[in-house]
Length: 305
Length: 279
Image (cartoon, rainbow over all chains, first blue to last red; front, side):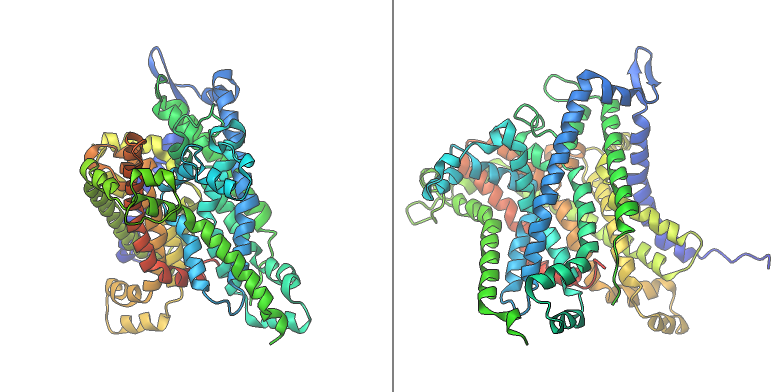
């Protein structure tokens, strides 16, 4: 049959608004940014420089120090999330899903509250609590006789980044908790009952039966955490400013991008190097997502009930 | 049932851990709200005490309402959030319907294309988005923010909604077609009401990051007339950093609206998540 099917206009109408807005505001600017990273200014105006911006970013001592510092800080920021946020989230979800737990809805709602607060609130309130001047934290440590442990954690180079990462964990632990809670609830009762008939209860039941079943959910959470962390900016900006003090100890890729693109104090903004950093971030996120999709997700066993 | 599963000791331990964590989660919010109602001296003297008749003071809130243009910021945030939420839900549901209902060439490719945005943050395009907004004269308008947030929210909305729309019974739609309903009527009259719970879930997930975003208001719309409440309170805190009453009151005011919205939607949100969004 040579005759083609007529175009079904309603399909076009249904798809067009979303595709247009998404393409125009998200995809085109994304490629615009990637493209911009290949140019720079010289005496004659904007010229194509190929990958030289990247060579500058990775190799020129004026840029590379800041870049590798931000990347290393970002990696540590992510590591703290993986080591603290996800185990705590799994633990809370496991407790919440224990059968016949009273007030489960209350706990769930309360523990999720920090997640809905804006970074402005979160950053500032923790600064207040940890402040040596106002001193809720020193006061509380004093009350239990541990005052000597107190230090201005946010102000010290050695501890500031970890403190901020833990604040971020405090804020976002509700997300892994909710997703894993949902995954735990979707495990059929028959599986649990069969385990109990075989005498597998309590901790053993959690490790041997439930954990393997929620691994795909943990995988999704890890990749979401990865994307979120390598894209983070707000918390650091709000609590430490665009300079990510003390002495750039809390500088991550997001704040580095912001400073480079918009400038700060005496340094002028540089759109091309900003685009270069954004492209590098894009590459990092892409590599991470691909590694996850091809190496980890394909090996995760999924169970169908 | 076996006693091992429900022993009282186990249940007490579970409650103890959960209560401890709930206190950790709520403590900072408690500190802000309590201290925002106290006089300056009382804030410093005993930060953890509840306001008493002597220490009760609204000076912080008075300063905020006098100095900051919080009503305007609040209105801006509402316009941006509601506007983009409406567009995300409408466009997202339409696209999700097209993807889940019709078979056409490039269907799965289109689905993949729209899902890309879940993994790649829109912020990485900021440099070019700013140039685009400057070129189209949209800098310092709420329209710019609404457009950006609509694009940001669409991928996840399409993804979740099309999963749900696959579950809507085919018989119902076929019955509608036999009765001569147009595809548009089927979508708006039959399918949309059925996926309302999924829409609520998407609404919450879309709304929170928009309301709390600092990056795009800071870059695209930092003018006084278009500041959102998140940016407004950030700037206010910067200016009033030593006026603790005012700062705490500003934070209190910023918490309340989103807290109220969350408490209204939380039941719906949990139902939406546990309905299988993760599978």
